[in-house]
Image (tube, rainbow, N blue to C red; front, side, top):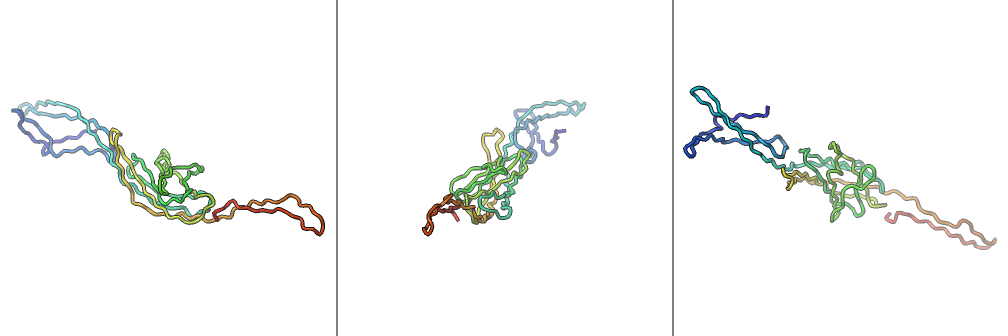
Length: 231
């Protein structure tokens, strides 16, 4: 029913200013697991008149402030199979929160120049940082019901190869007043993305017609170009 009775060894009687005062010792308030915020608690003290068993009470309220503390998240990134250049490749980060009331971000390092991350519709997600880093925010990783979103790696145009990257998950929890926060980092995990080269259709240009005389060389113009200047 939400009440808690404290008695016997947790109550001591001391005399202060000529009056007997009952004090609680060794009592702490433990909020529910992963719960933070403000809690208003009521306290009622009872006295019993031993001669006639009459009971008198006095009540008051007090507030307990529980600040959030970030729990260490986990992450286990892996690219789903190998991919091909210019085609988004699904990457499962498998990032998880222990406290679902917290928010999560993932920082990836080792991103090649020109590469990015997208959602299933091909829209860019996250933001590039300095030195080949990329940060995915909570909304990039999770739906409203906390199921994981699909995130894809998109290499630089026409570029193939293998890249070893690292991923770090960071959880964030706020104080009760929302004015400060704590963070906790997962272990850093390594994963590899491999994109195979794909031949691009060349662009062929030639004259529609060539005209000349017999026994005479007739000049024609033929040119072919590839859109892939990388390989």
